Length: 459
Image 1 (cartoon, rainbow, N blue to C red):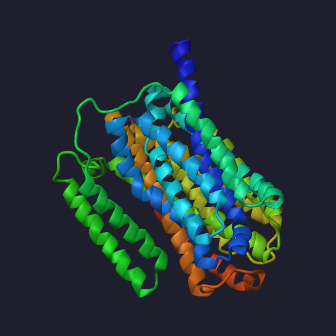
Image 2 (cartoon, one colour):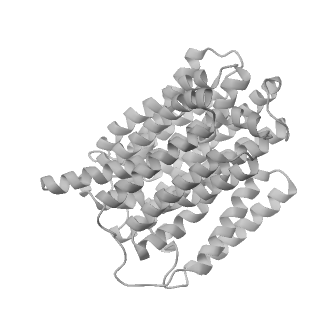
Image 3 (cartoon, rainbow, N blue to C red):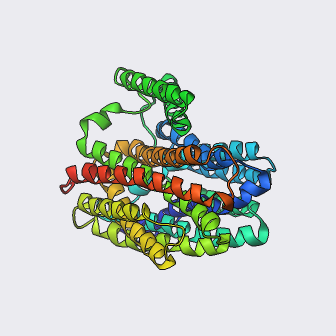
């Protein structure tokens, strides 16, 4: 590879990684700031959960349609537009004084994220040679985890000194810089030569099905939740059958059913995020409501996990170019399962040293799972399917995160009810945490199995 092409690739890696860093930074910072947001905007426990879930739901629903649209109009164009929208609605969210409008702006930020995530990894993979794929994915994942590490720490400082809206303003400013960098350094569009029609009906069936499934799951065990969950499954079955019959589907369903490695790897990603995303949400509430830490102190505890993840991702990404990426991902999933099992037994007086040890263990597991698993997914498909594979990976991640938040919200609803959280409810919160972590542990052990089934080098 020439020096000029290498330099170009480095700039593209930098832009994609910076774009990918905005979302985890904001997510981890908001998790830490939620108690302050709850107080300032008078949010109850369910609305507090929707500040997080609304964003993930919108991103998950729109990601696959956006990936298909990117193949038609150009990946760079949609990627840049996504960053711009994310930035604009970040500023709107920071200016709001209403909990309802905050949830609306978070949903609109999800639209921008869907455009970014449906194209970002595809652009990255298309810009480097196959032998460097794991390395650049490791860099991208490491940057994501570094932003996760910085989120609680910087978010705690911003919340304590400038108020919670400053988190959204910082993310919006980073987005503006990234938007400029996109149109300066990314020159190619990577779009289809042959024009085809966009599958509107398939997109609608998919959107309704996924919305009903995820929203219904968050309402369980209420009757409304059961009905919506069943309705979501029906719509997704109809979507699957419809996609197999048309010439230009929004999602190539054969890619999922005929490619065993792709199917098992995306399923492993779904299970991993379903089992782990609620950890940061619940741990943030635990540290502040049960252990009495302020946002800055809680951020210093939570930063351990992300630092370990960041360092491990660089190593595992590079290793996945040389040894079985499936093996690395399976080892990572097993380590996460062990960490989750230990979380089930924490109490209101558990040593902070032991808590830090568990977080470090979880960080190690996440680092070994993430970038190798993405490497397996992207290596299992042809280049023309990169956008779809990237979007499917992102959808599994966001769907898993929404499921994880649904598990946490359901546990809180069953134990605490729809009331405002406070330190007086510390025992009830601790009980809901144990329920959440017990369910997540079982999920993660199932993920170890799905990851281990595909244990073979990918050519």
